[in-house]
Image (cartoon, rainbow, N blue to C red):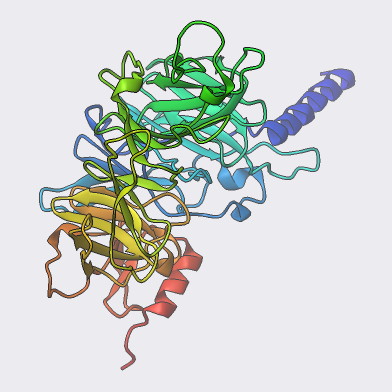
Length: 483
């Protein structure tokens, strides 16, 4: 081989190495198989823990991106077990077995309503990119949306976006996310076999509301009409195109001609209840307080959404925030004193119809309703109460374990609450809230990924899928008794 040819080959190799370091593209996705390739009905999409075909898929804790100092720290198959996506078989007695890492890569987002999704044979998730800047610093605030089969054997990249808090949902046929810098809603289509093209499905967006564990998206835009101050509200379902629901003529006294300034409404979606197909929103007139307040509207058919102002329900004469739907009413929990707003029969001049509950020890963070109970957090401890829509709710404390509310929300699955436990190095834990009865001992929590035997801890058990550093911390916190 000639010297010139050797030189060319060497330069090509150097260039490829440099390219890999820059793009983070030279990692192998060869992995698995891990357990069976499941493909069936899914429960709890868009959360920390999702179930399919008798297996639970979950994020094994909240890992900091500060642990990623070089691209290989988050390469597929080389990432920390903390933050990786796990897979466990759910047994008939509620226990978990056959636990293994199915996605050996850090799940990461700072979007509070983010989570993992499963459709068919694919797990959809988001991770810090392994791209680097011109100083070889890993761009951890750049995110990569990916999918891996439920046995871990095949992985594909879907999209790379800027911004750790990027809002998104995954539907059966597309990733939809909001590019806040360019004020665009983007859609990346896919099939079972391949990733498709990226499309812009709405531009010049003023605000967007993705809905928790739902594929409905609402957004607002400024009117394109001159001298119109009212905004427009649009809705998209399952990654489809946006349909206009509300514009400057929706609440006008006449549908022909220019709309008087005092009748032009500014509308802001604040909550969507997928179970009842109800959108809650605030609206105020640009020229005063005509019909100002907080309202709800229930769709007849969300697949072909249409808005009918004659069917809206008014709940308050002011713009509420942080609302929780409860039957025929709205609950606000921004303060220790919870207020229930019931429908106002006179939409124009009616006074608020409210019930104020007794003061809680702190503002409650509502998790869910089940049976006669509302489950919630007070100072990050799990509570429940009956009569939550009355003046004197009956409270019960379920546990002293700290349930994080600063990242992805705690979620329920088959009678268990899955949550990030900040008492134990921010791994995913669970506790069986459905077994609690008044007078029982407070609930304990167990790490979801399971334990192994150890003579260094007080109960002879040590979390198995923990980093070595976190295991040492755990042993220090739960030492075995000395002889």
